[in-house]
Amino acid sequence: MAVADDTLAGLPRLGLGLGLRNVHFDAILSDAPHDLWFEAISENFMDSGGRPRAVLCAIAERHPIVLHGVSLSIGSTDPLDTGYLATLKRLADEVRPAWISDHLCWTGVNGHNSHDLLPMLLTEESLAHVTARVIEVQERLERPLILENPSSYVRFAESTIDEPEFLRALADATGCGLLLDVNNVYVSCFNAGTDPHAYLDAFPCERVVQMHLAGHQDLGTHVIDTHDRPVRAEVWELFRTAWARTGGASTLLEWDAAIPGFDTCLSELRKAEHYMADALAPHDGPEGPSAGAGVSNPVDFLVPRAMDSVMEHAP
Image (tube, rainbow, N blue to C red; front, side):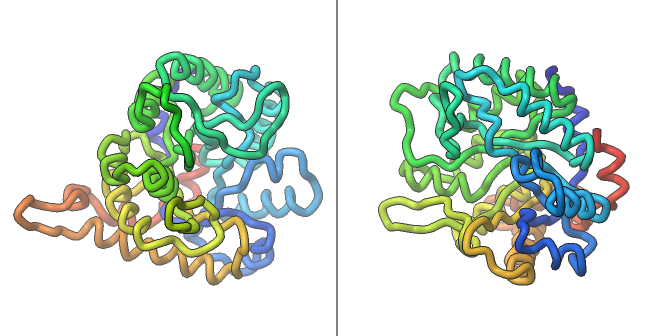
């Protein structure tokens, strides 16, 4: 199933959200701000029952939810795991996420899961391979798939297509949406010695449904996507540009290790509001208005839509 453009256009803009982590369950259920949305790792709930599944359902009744996978392995040469997809669809039918996302990567081969998001060879052949698999996934899930640019530490010498161009061609062929991980842009470009701003210039921002923010570890010669600390200044600056160019895509903070309290994560997330407002402010100069000056109605992007809007568009 190639998704029509108006299907993605109909997905809600959710404002700011947090990754759903079990250490925050009680805080979310008791006093989470009503304007937050949450991203649940699909695999944490697909086969679970008991309290985790009950909490997810309870949160989904109060806040918008999206499902974010780490094991789809869309780039693998193994056949698609139809059992995995069936279980994922059952979970989605139950919690009614605004969308389902995963990564442009492969996670295993010959039936073995590496539990890592491994980089792909980017060629015309791999593009055709992934295109067919995305179409099949969308048919089985009966909803669009949203794919994220992964962090990477190596690049294949045999690759013939830059990642933004690859994602643009994939989205055009399948109608899938994109999840722009701003931290991953910085990490991958730093490790490759390329310009992250040039990456954003080439990225199909019009296809972006969601963005990610996260912290990384700087080791001098390379950086590692650790998700265990605050967002670095360089990533915030990239976010300012990305938020304007995506027209205010739903933005989520990931914090997956050394997780602080809920209020600390929320405070880090709220820093985004400064960059969002600044991106929309006119900055006229020798080169004219900034990218954000062309946004027609800033209020639509700074204020999340109501929960009933999410349910209206949820499959």
